[in-house]
Amino acid sequence: MNHSHQTAPTQFVEANGIRFAYRRFGKTCGLSSDDPAKPESELSDRPKFNVVIVYEDRAAGRRAKYFYDNLIHELEDECDFSLELWSFQVLAISTIGHSAVQVAGQADFVILSLHGKAGLPVEIREWIETWSRLTNDSNAALIALIDKPRTRGGSAASTLAYLRSVATRTGIDFFAHDFTYLCWATPSSEF
Image (cartoon, rainbow, N blue to C red):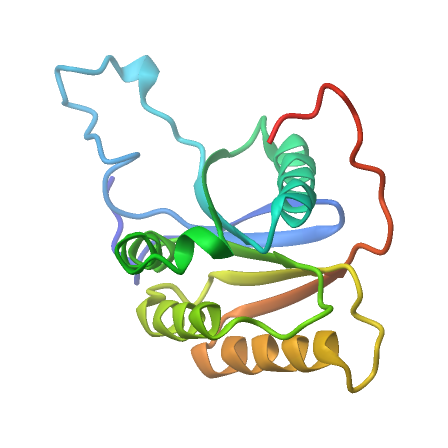
């Protein structure tokens, strides 16, 4: 049965003590059960979450990927995930930034990973503002991963306040996560 956004039942998945609510409506994974190209066994009833990671540099990207990997590890048997990753540097290129913001507007989770030593670059603030206007789902979440969030009145604190205000204005959830010092020097880690 195809549900609309108004008739779809709310379902829940839990990971790391956080309960995620979601609704499924429309065709499953873009396919109908009568699609001759796909057998019924290949259609997924599992919820699919679209995740976008925006990161300041390689270290911040690794931190975000580590966070993402832990999240999907908890939910991999119950959910499907798609992931898009973009660095601040790449998003500053207007054509790429424009394409990325369109994808992020459809995301369930946008993970922003930065160091917090300096404020957000102007291009990234503009990207965030554009993304916030395109966010189609009030069930989306903005997750900030900052390695120096404890400095009161400093860049990290003002960045968190800004991101929290964007989430409030947009009507989405906001989560901030503190990554103080973690070792990323595992030879098998791939980013």
